[in-house]
View 1 (cartoon, one colour):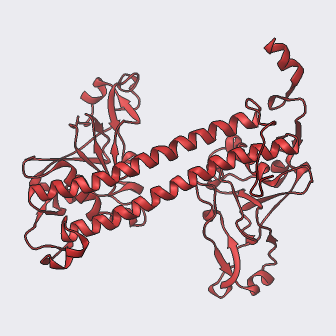
View 2: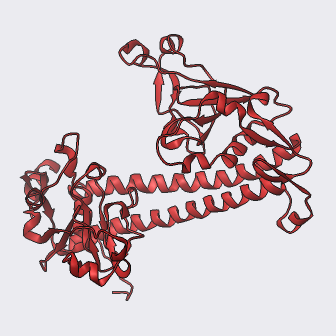
Length: 432
């Protein structure tokens, strides 16, 4: 009966089975497709009043535009730039950003760079918000080879997209935007908590665990890493920690990788966070035949190479790392608290992540790093305060991750009609 119903209500298309009342159309049949203009060159063209949006202004994760340049009227005139209306859909059409499949809508009327493609629906039966979600489900880069990928406007125009009746378009856009808004609100909470943590860390590592109103009473001393309470010591990591780096088993040897059960951590997992699981594993043979070393739980990890240099992680299980990660563990756990070690490194060496270019920190450098060392009970107080706020951040981040997974699955299922919302009653702000 169910199979017969599918035959009666669905039809076979290039995109698979779709409802019979849905159309399959070329993008150019329902929208105007164009690209922006050349970016003005020279300081005299900037600090004007006209918004100018570039590829880098599209957030990689959130599909939004929050900042942009401002150009002068002369820049618009000299470069013959065209203004695009608010809600125009934009995405990269050249360069490595094509692989990221960025999508965004203009938050205001704006001028855009030539590396961006612009899509604006021009038919009465097409909802712009729905079209945005359609394009988020389209992967333009899947056929592109490595190098400098380019999307031609002609190929964008020929892309086939599903087009439900207008009422169902509206319902699909409503469902997806509701999930997206919930995630954006959760992301805002995460951001606020992270900013609060930064402020708290600055206070704790300057004055210790005292109330803000009592901070002025704390006697401070000046050190090479800034001010700290007079009674605290300043020590080198190499004198109080066991410090090890890792290694990578030969990629040519499958026996070192296939069906491995030894957790193996890379620098990308070090994001100033508690690490609860490994993204990759190696075999015991891989561990034994490489410079990788098994680290104990409660080891602090610090990335030594690349974009995450200086970022930390805190192991909650036994694991090994690759050669780009150093593991730090107290030589005397009655003298140095493991969690305090994690947070003090996180606080003192954030400038690593701000350094431009490809940066390397080796083991000898890490051993020489100075950290503040208060008495053990004070260390525990500081670690507890920061652990509490980290738990809040983790809980909110888990919500955001769950909402993102929900969005991704709903986007896929709604665009392929595996889930239908044609009978959904949407109540707008006026109550109709």
